[in-house]
Length: 156
Image (cartoon, rainbow, N blue to C red; front, side, top):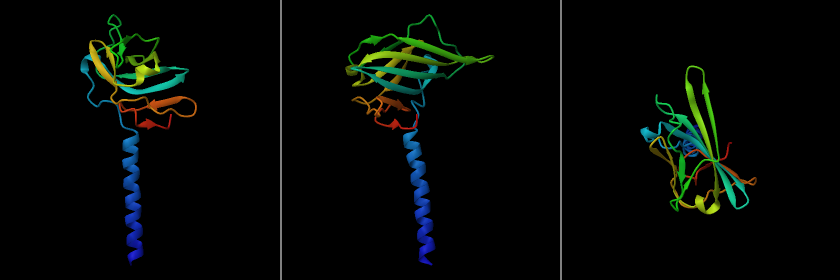
């Protein structure tokens, strides 16, 4: 009588821990992004290149307003410097217009050591909240699904 109950409890505990682990590792960026930015961050990725790194930020439209191409877009690093994107890619669908943007920034390692903000359309989105650079995989890459870069998504 005791063994089936124990097995059931262990199975329930494993299922609960699995759901908790998935929730922690797949946490999203800010659930309430600045509405003035008109977009929300989906993910960011880093790729090491010597003493520099490519930071790519994927944004998805969060409202009905379009991206204002006339307003500047820049990344503010911990030292207060503003960095313009080195590359920008857009995606969308007929009838929906522009739905996704990818900004790519070329940054020194020191620029990754603290909080990082993305300023666009007159709003600000928090890219990174914690101190220190994230751990990279053996190929010098990391994908972050939240502004807490200590939680690195190992999937892709």
